Figure (cartoon, rainbow, N blue to C red):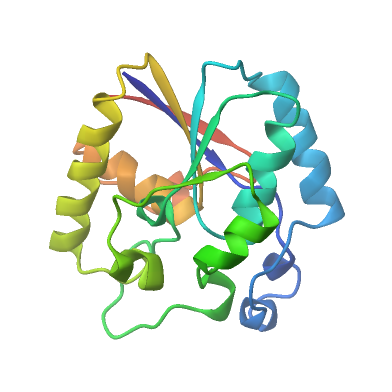
Length: 191
């Protein structure tokens, strides 16, 4: 199975760092929307594809624009929500990385499914500051569940730290922030 990780388009939270990290539920910028529209040509989707999406507005918007007019399966999961990389002790999740609530997702993205196999704790807090051993366990379970879907490839729309954390988990290689993909950049990993 191939997993293709895609980083979301440019978000409002990146325009005036570090002040903009305080924006709660930032959207894509107009540049981010343009970046995502280019994805339709770079990585065209089919009706048989599956996309897992982080429950943040910018990733949901990325998946929505990218998959417009394609009747593929879109599943929102806290298991691909933001993850601090590297994980720093005693840090908190920034306002820009707080998950949207389930009811908000249902209202704003009614055609997206919710991963209700994920615990309510994950839906509340995500994986951002989950201790490394717990992330490894949850990540392995998520990858195993993806394999049970019996697809040749699965797309995941997520965040730079999350993508790098999963790449490190799957490959066993030691990665750094220098390995972060750019906005709407993508990385293919074999499982």
